[in-house]
Image 1: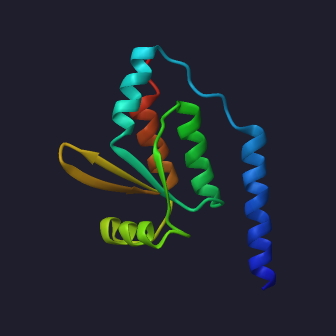
Image 2: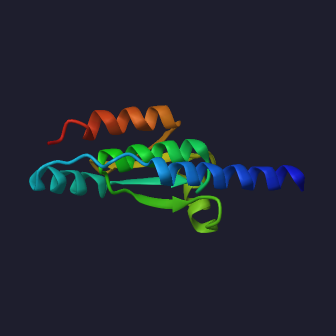
Image 3: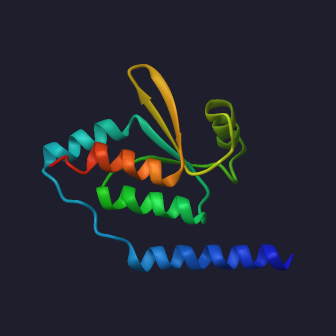
Length: 124
């Protein structure tokens, strides 16, 4: 019981820290942002709301100004099952990437952030 209370409290602190220190979104041309929005429609992030690695990944999405659909793999049993059946494990964050008719499930915040930086940081 005490450990759960500590986890919940820590999660709330992480969310508060994120809210007060969130980076500014990248500014780009209207055409560039339209391109990002179109490409981001093929991505979705499976996450837990207060997971520090998920917060780190969401901060990158915000900074890069990439609107991605978020799925709550902790509290939504349908999304949790979708993550398990598609990605093979319940581990977050997980970026689901649909490209050329194929699905790819990318785990680990560092790998996801590197992918997002490579794909979207240079779009002007």
